[in-house]
Image 1 (cartoon, rainbow, N blue to C red):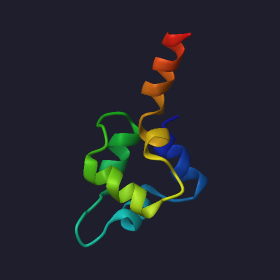
Image 2: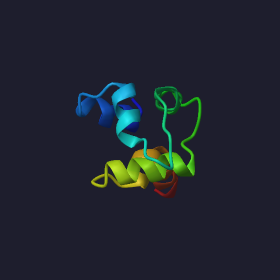
Image 3: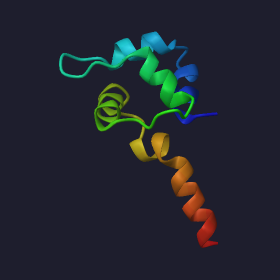
Length: 78
């Protein structure tokens, strides 16, 4: 399961609720954007990651969005 989805479900949020929380005056996040990222159809944009970090500062961007890449690199180094 996608890490973004794990975090969202852990917080008992719908995609729409998470999008509303992440939306600001400067950056608009949609539930469709969250769905696309959760389904691995799209990668998160810089603005999406910026909004995520602002809203959920307790999570590291690399752990949420780049875990699979770093995990693969780690495995290849063994």
